[in-house]
Image 1 (tube, rainbow, N blue to C red):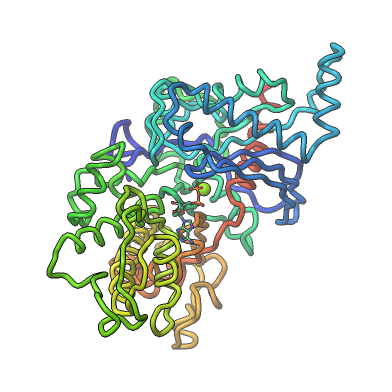
Image 2 (spheres, rainbow, N blue to C red; image 1 turned 90 degrees about the vertical axis):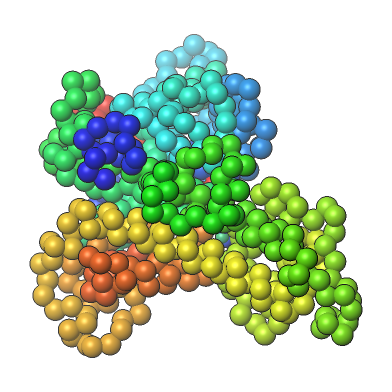
Length: 491
Ligand code: ADP
Ligand code: MG
């Protein structure tokens, strides 16, 4: 972590975000936000009420697979701009038509008519200003060569302008930073949030760092404008690429095969063991590995004497398990969640979604065991990343409160924060389908945190983990707000 704060080109990118303050819940206004996550594109407008609450209108479309590997970035970004246009027509019709009419009649565009938009772009970007950032590399299956090295805000603004929309890309937001901001706006109490972390298609984290530690920015000549008064800056770790050299990460034949057949072999190695895009594929490769071994009895029940549902287990030739990415990570959640005797849900899903019929209870149990190991490993690695940030920022040493839950009650509280002095709480905001839907993901994280030297049972209790629901939208709005202020201040 420290190495990345000193210089470019290190293992953790530690990208300065130019965001120097986290919100406290009193912020107000109407903003737009878009989120290019990896799987979906979301467009939303957010009304911040200034009392830690907000109203949000949103639409969501799946990003067409062919656009992820389009020939030119224009194809992708014009698609995104069209979604913004549709959203405005649907949800802010008056605003939209009023603006178009004034433009057509040559009327002046009023500044207050323009929506400030926060652009959540969840790929590694070298940020050089609050609304300026150069794409470093694609991840998560995207591959559009001409976008690399370009300013992604400009790419989007160009397509927005081509459609004549009343929208200004005011801030470039990594989803981790948005999560951190959103959690900080909505989290209970006056404790600011330390870390925003994503466990969705990919995984990454952003945290509040002391500005004087971010020397690669503060000591650089062309570092751009930012507010220095808070003494802090949010840093985007890009922890998905932690340990690409595999010094310490666990490595199995399935990890190796997944990586070799990915569009970015050798990079994002941490992410490839932790996030939603990959866990289903690891399971698939493990199952295929077992099927290749004729002595292994998985899915081989030949008659009703062996099989408790009266027929031969059969795998259809066109089963998704034979195709790369054929198993979705949501199947791991189904496995973890189906504790019923006989695992009916698992067997039904294998039948319905994966073309494997008449699966025995033992087979379902075997699949569950593998899936559970993959999910648990992911959560435990997630805990390592969280612990690294907590330990290296020294937050655990900064305890002011005295009575811990442990000392007071001598019993285990249900979750970290019960009875903790507010200044002792270390708040972490998380987002992403994996952490939201995988059963007990947080419990596995907590179990691992307790085992980590430097955290332990006491430290684990001080860490409060909360989902930042709709984090990317609200967070981007909050950053667009901050960006708006900066723009006004410097005018
Ligand atoms: P994005 O990363 O695009 O912002 P999400 O946070 O929704 O989107 O994450 C999508 C990823 O989560 C996909 O890789 C998908 O396989 C995985 N996923 C979707 N539903 C579930 C679920 N119920 N349990 C675990 N993983 C899921
Ligand atoms: Mg997301």
